Image 1 (spheres, one colour):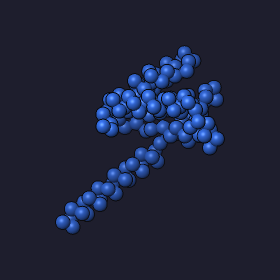
Image 2: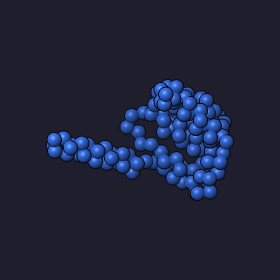
Image 3: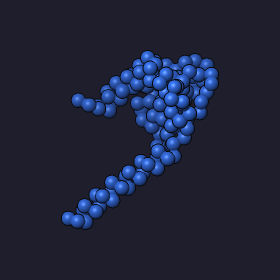
Image 4: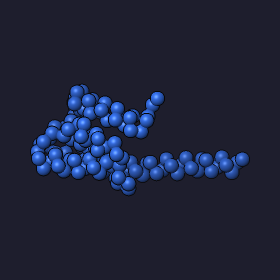
Length: 126
């Protein structure tokens, strides 16, 4: 009984350490002065979710267009590539920029669509 308890505690410590290591290895998302903060953070979220999202970003950058939320979400819900280091989307933002982002209707819309699609894809919730 005591051995099982020790194994459970050890597993929790190990899992917590892995998650801390992942956080420590996050890459900072570079600031692009030619894009709005909202666009940059939306793109960063999509890049974290899927390599298809990264391909979408490359296409959007090539064309010089604003990202389409529906298309990016469609790519994002396929899942993240394995063994990739996630971006820290807020690393280079000031507190004022984070407030601007959270107040943005575009950002709220992007998150709402993302959560709806993820709910349908992965059957979260009900």
